Image (cartoon, rainbow, N blue to C red; front, side, top):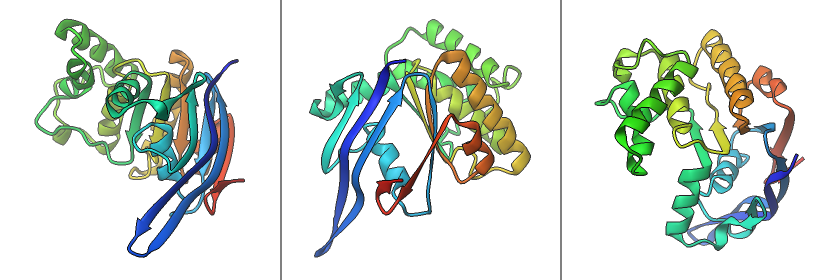
Length: 223
């Protein structure tokens, strides 16, 4: 396997009044393509901050993130947005679906924004909704779906542009155990089917144990 993501000396600090808060203190991490990784640690350890940097949602204070050997943060903001849209899929604890649109329309949205032809975006979204077990719920709006179904729509949406990497930040943190287990199983199935590199922040020990590797963030560093 080849390296898809390599993190070297990654640091992130925030200025809060006269104080400087060090959130990440020299993170080194190397991920191979098509692997699964669980990121665990106490609340406030910096897990979400690290995920934002891995996904190029924020820039580090120092250090590098290499995607297939290329320094991501040498890109300008416009180039970075294009990189993110093409290569990274995001799933968060709260699904952030657009309530006025159907499940199908929500999943189509990233492709439409990327100027993919509507018929192609629609066909791809239909296939993704079938992949996540919602083939019969495509015309339902988020308010007509359960919490687990809404998260399934959000996962399908994250895959709309065929990313290489899927970052999931507590994807089942707001769901009951039975629903969580279904989401966990679906994520691992999708990862295998699509050859994704999957990184999951989780407090759920069963989900973490299902990942190929587990890394722990403590005091801004990986154990």
